[in-house]
Length: 179
Image 1 (tube, rainbow, N blue to C red):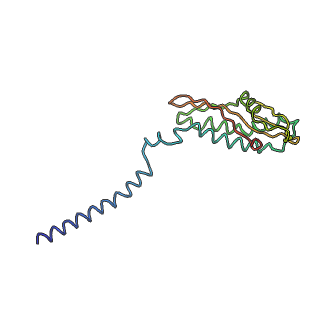
Image 2 (image 1 turned 60 degrees about the vertical axis):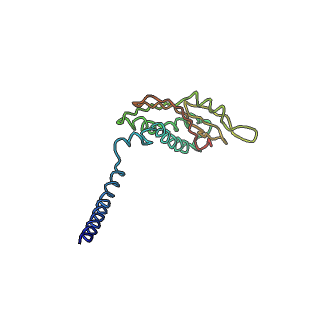
Image 3 (image 1 turned 90 degrees about the horizontal axis):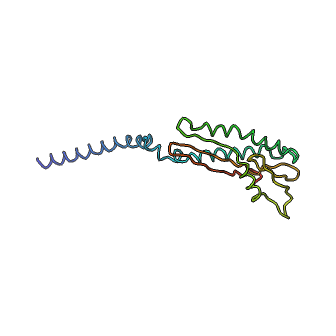
């Protein structure tokens, strides 16, 4: 009778262990989904505020350069650059105000001198191309193509200040015509 009782007790222990294990599964799943505060520090979004600004500004430059394509002849290139800037201003403001509550401060300004250097090195030209000269207006690089103004690139300086320090980056975002 002793061996039968031991056998039942062993089965009872196994069943109890199975119940406990099954009960722990939802708790572990909830823990992994909710995370904990230390996870915030390790996340890419927390570590890469520069990348966040880059993504927003890159999409904005794409939209802005599409919005002026074919709408301005070459004599209206200043107006085209102003149109690019008007389209970009809300995005720049969005970046600058985006993470203030988390202690991340962005300063976004156009870099005219870097835009000029980019234009000298990257403006499409040559005997097999019928493109005109490139000019810069602030950080906006435009080129004459078939009598129309095409925005090729926009150059931004971005300063990101966090509790860990300050990072300065210059981005050249190619527009639709600058590919």
